[in-house]
Image 1: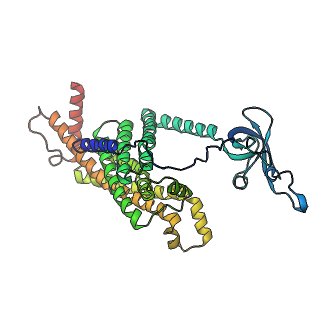
Image 2: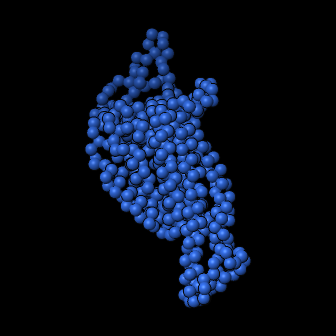
Image 3: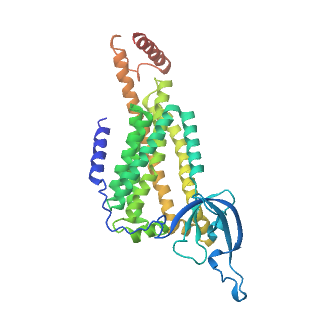
Length: 417
């Protein structure tokens, strides 16, 4: 607590100083979900979809012996009522996914601004029902298996997203220093999520210290790698939009912040598991010496490191799958592909996150061993106060005898309680 309380105070102070004011300067980023005057977004249900002459070609299409252009048209029943309307589906959607009867779609109604050609254009699918069902299934499964702790973890996840939405993203949009914003936001999330989901205990505090250490390591690597590896973010269409529209936003800072936040979840997983492993090993064999306890826990930690490194790599590979396919089709050499602008950010994110993860495991394990042994000695002092001289649990007894002493003392304590 002598370490965590000042860190918590520093986190609160940093968030107060960096808290966004709401003044984002000359931000000129037009939302694709905002319709122009006279144009409205409508929703409806597709009744039938078939390939036919494109309504956008107009009534004169096919004149002069030229065949009219063909496209996918979805006859859609508007939610607001009225007759079915012909919604022209964009070629990208028609080729990649298609539209079929029963689909819920969102489309642009251009009838208020034009009377020629197609006045209904496909905009997007309505995904509310399947996504809500998936979220409910996720919550039910987590709560059914993890019970009360699972519910608290889900609520904590909501709090984490609130920190991102209310502090991190607006602060970055206003041009606040990215690294302090990332560290303050990540630390606040870590404090809240770990204590809320796992409760206030020495075990949770140890995992928290290990997570904060890992975050610091990732932050230093991310800050260095963003400049050294020339991560510009210009391979992403959304980044181009931000560069042109948000004058105060630092793209390199945004990348640095993203590298730090992306390592947060896996760090929590590793440090909590490692701290719990030390406590459980100590409970099973209280007589185990500090060095042996550390070695046993590290054997678990090494397995966790190996599996989590794969998890990070495959998670980022899955997210970058379209880019990987393009790189393969370009037939570039492997080294050139991995260091290209399209993949460099994902590679650096994987490496920086993995380094922080690996370093957090021995640090968390060592801290957990120190704390659990100190707690055991304090408990031995309390329980052995009336038993004459205190036994040195790490030197005077072997494992079996020490287990017997702990069981005897535990029984006396429970009887007294």
